[in-house]
Figure 1 (cartoon, rainbow over the protein chains, first blue to last red):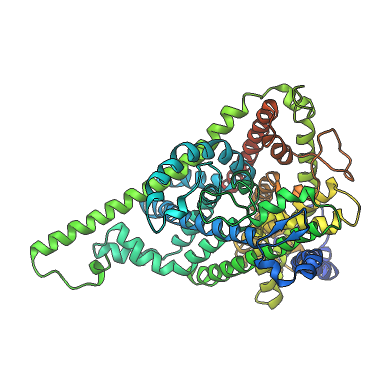
Figure 2 (cartoon, rainbow over the protein chains, first blue to last red):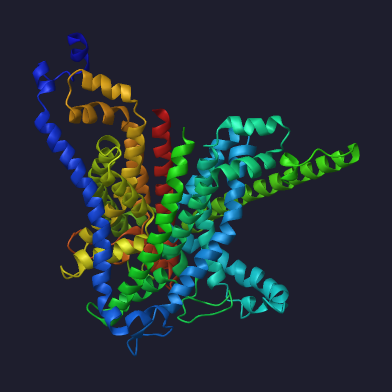
Length: 328
Length: 292
């Protein structure tokens, strides 16, 4: 016993009493940890309160109608949030629709199809794609994707889908290359690695015996994925998708570069628009301290906070319990 | 599709063969689509890297690292932006890391099962994915407006807030990996809990903690939106923390949107520097973790 204590103790420390005599240190350390934990709670509370305080003048001036007013007119000092809210929701939802099938394909490939030697490098590459800063996506989107959209994709789509009777209006308008669809595309590329990595992680929690049973009955790999793995992990998969949605809602720089920045609601997907984040980033510089405009921008921030908090909270609730149950 | 697993056995050989062919075809098509998806993801990564190197190397040279930003047409480099980034990321990391490690320690070692612990874990995870632009607006309200101006310290504070939840997550995950028998062994020798945590637990997962911090640095080094509202950016040399301070992402943002050829070129060079640094940090973090 004494022997063991001596070997564990760092060389500099003296007698056994020194090792034991730390009840004061225990109290201090536990409280440091607890205070830090409470600090995180306070941080979230402070963010909500500060944003709300800043938004108060705008909410007082425009009331709840702020949320569904389309007008955004800095000259007349009249502000409404409808355009950026519309742009935020439409780009984020479109991005999810574009990203989820690709992310699922990547996760399927990484968990069931890829040979062992390929798993790690491809998995790492996907994670690196997630690590690229958002401003880089913005620049790359603006200088690489926008010209492709303007010269190839959009003219082709306008000539084909744009001629269709019921959905044609979605693809009307001149092919600028920027706009809602381009923003959604860049967002999709940004969230593919996030969603793919989450899916891969939850897919790998499926107990091998389930999959082996299905394979033993003669199921193909796709059948194992679709009938065994996906039903087993569906809750977490939805959680992962919500996580991607949360990312897409608040993305700033990548969108600012490519969305075209116009403060009106457009029904065509090629039209320019704005998201909450891109509008705040763009117009913040022209909003003086104490101005109504600044308050309107902070009100937009508050709305974005509520939106993304709800989405992220749902995502966490879906991801947690099944992850716990599956880890056994 | 689902008929194959749960459905009735086929009536005759011909049906069985047809069914088998169809299942085989579905499997092949889906496998093909999965491979296409993966290739697509890799193409995006390669395209981004290729564009960065191709356009970023054009203005690359020693002056990028030795000269400050200058008006269009007169050359100049990115020295002030690089130094500003290092200062703000450095201070943000130094402030945020200890807080994050303490919170992660609380979650893993003290909170087990408690309501407060659940709440802290939930809020920290939400903050992990919260839009960084909101952190910027928050710090603007908290540190910029009341103290009369944009400042490097406000930028560092915003980055510190962003790095905290990243460090919390890795710290908790790493501490959870330690077998309880190790804790019991140390406690059984009469060690106080805080020494058990700091001398034994931290040490046994040190590489994991370092990984978390490296990933956190990689994340905040590329953050642009929060700095827009806090340190604003500065096109002249300034290391004064109470004044607006330059940083690489903000300079890239300002230059990439400018109409001047040489500024756009320099923006690409900055983008190359920041991306290579961030990806290298990520790779180093993985190597550190794998070595352990």
